Image 1 (cartoon, rainbow, N blue to C red):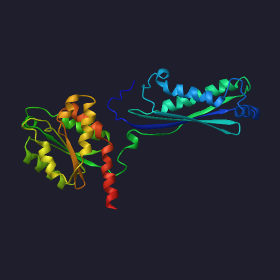
Image 2 (tube, rainbow, N blue to C red; image 1 turned 90 degrees about the horizontal axis):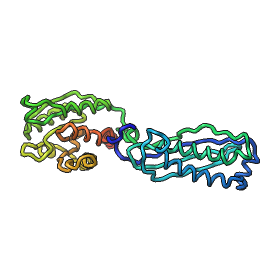
Image 3 (cartoon, one colour; image 1 turned 180 degrees about the horizontal axis):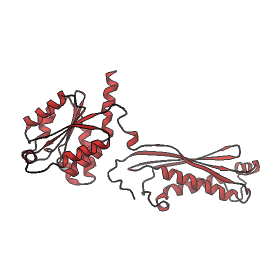
Image 4 (spheres, helix red, strand yellow; image 1 turned 45 degrees about the vertical axis):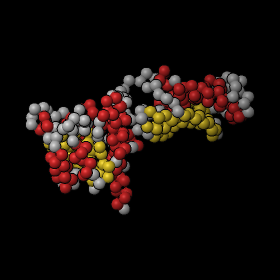
Length: 302
């Protein structure tokens, strides 16, 4: 199974369709009049579809078990065709497209099974996904404008060459996945003035995103939040809340992080933890959804 532990929980919706075609009007009449020998075709197939949606992971090897929050099964008759639609909702890390299509398939098979004693020409066709919603593709920046980024590593030991930097490079790798060009990479000591001077310089160079790593803990030398907060025109509390919430689902010590984020002018500034794991989890928690700040800024400028 695909690893979805890094994904964010969000509302996921999928609607799938299947078509059952009968060979004559008398079959349609039997369905409408509820005279099919095996029972009420729509009600029985609806129940079968509900079971199918909930048991998709039992049937399809790579499907994750997930909470099904809502399922609706709709039938309509168009000529000699029965159109089936299955709508599924969940709040989870992965989508419900397969669940919706599995449900539609079983509804169609149930109808086929119920009608075959009275109609030897029944056919199933066109099982397909009509639409889906949720996940990263729905929560990206909403803008085609390319973003430029700078990465600052805040560390006494890395700045004097006693240790190698891995966290800053992890940020760069994550940004590149989203097509964000990193044009500046710097290392500064854990010193308020050094951090502020570097951020101010990058801000004057009109970078869209400035990401710092390190100095968000509780030691005496962890001063990145103290350096960044006075520079922000607007702190965005939800940024830090999301990072800590995401981290605490994986490691309880994340509650101790003092990460911070906000806007200075049109520049997004983020202060992330110093560990590679903390950085990677924070980036997964925020991107690409956080890029929506630039769409908001575009709209407010008009």
